[in-house]
Amino acid sequence: MRTVVVVPTYQERGSIDELVARTRRAAPQAHLLVVDDGSPDGTAEVVEALAERDPSLHLLRRRSKDGLGAAYRAGFAWAREAGFEAVVEMDADLSHPPEVVPDLIDGLDRADLVIGSRYVPGGRTAGWPWHRRLISRGGNTYVRLALGVSTQDATAGFRAFRMRALEVIDVTGLRSNGYCFQVETAYEAHRAGLRVLEHPITFVERVEGSSKMSGRIVAEALARVTWWGLRDRLLRVDRRARRRRTATPVVAPRHLAPARQLSVVGPVVATLGVAVLVGLLAGCGSGTGAAAVAPPTADRAVAATAQAPDPSTGPAGGTGSAPSAADAAATEASDERLPADAAPISPPVGLSIPAIGVEAPVSSLGVGPDGAVEVPDNGDDTGWLDSSSLPGARGPAVLLGHVDSAAGPGVFRDLEQLVVGDLIQVRTESGATVDYTVTGSSRYPKTEFPTDLVYGPAPGPLLRLITCGGVFDQSVGSHLDNVVVFAVRA
Image (cartoon, rainbow, N blue to C red; front, side, top):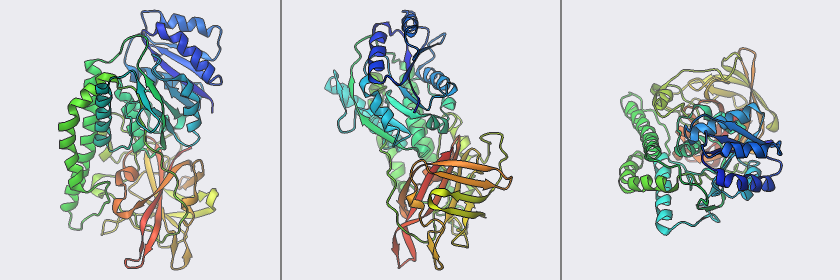
């Protein structure tokens, strides 16, 4: 992939020479973009002089210091306009080893986001006292518990993205400007169902310059992470309350049992709030990630019985990023459908998956009186959950199908054989065809179906395919698991 390493700078004159030299040696095929926020020490002038001898070195000047997030958003926008397929982000203070850049890029063969992490096996810090390590781990633990992500190092500033991953999480719409920008991008990648890997690194205490951390940055990070976690839980509580008020209960599987979900907030805030504040202050920008989910082995199943979210909360839809923390709750409850481009947006009528030989009509499905998503009448057909997004519109379109039936194998019998990069095509009533690319798949026990991950809102066009999997339980006449394939618009 055509790759650019984006490095934000402010007062980095003392380290920028060495950083450029080591990066060029480690990854000679990659380009390097320095985004300078008007450094008064002449950092931009040093880069400008180096760029005269190196056509792969670029400089993006900005007038003022607007924050790390703003600098990265400007760099990502530049990279997209220049046609790069992958972006690496790295600090300029030499705390991130440039020699690891090729490993992060190579990891994009298996993931959408690869993070240089201190807190996976093989990762470590150098030059930190024990109390700083303890505080940093406490901060990352808080992020994991508050946001429900499996990331071990949730504040990393050393990572590689596929360009399409940045588009899916709508990075230009994110609002964090401090080191919380790193947490937000990892969080939104998790919500969007993207594949995230952590690669171990040795994080070295900065050898040049001084930390850019401030009280404002710490306050932003703590406020946003706490708000995201509380918002996600309060929305789930609201959905459960609405279900209890309906004559027919709506059954929606959840990540955790209600009591456990609610009990997390108090203890976490009470025991780790201070650790977060100091942890962010001690060095928020140093590593995050979540283990990628490998596609399960192929296994046959019967009718898809994925559960539906509460219809009274608005449309069902996959996961993704909200435009900002301030309006995230409104976005999550909205049924607004925004087109991804100028193509007509209309309901699906046909589905094609060349890799597994699927060519099937698509009907419209609703939610039954028991709260479960309806399934197609015919084992060879597929169905679109009509409360989910339209193909090509913002958010996830959700399609379901049988794996087999009384008449024999069903349309989604080979769904688990799909691999990353496979093409899925959805034909619509308007005559348009919307292309999606598979980003991953997983199998979940039906009692632990990840409702928010599958049906939650997203800023970009996504697709979820759902069927059954796992062991068939004769006593209930159903398989015990659901299989979900995740895809993004190609």
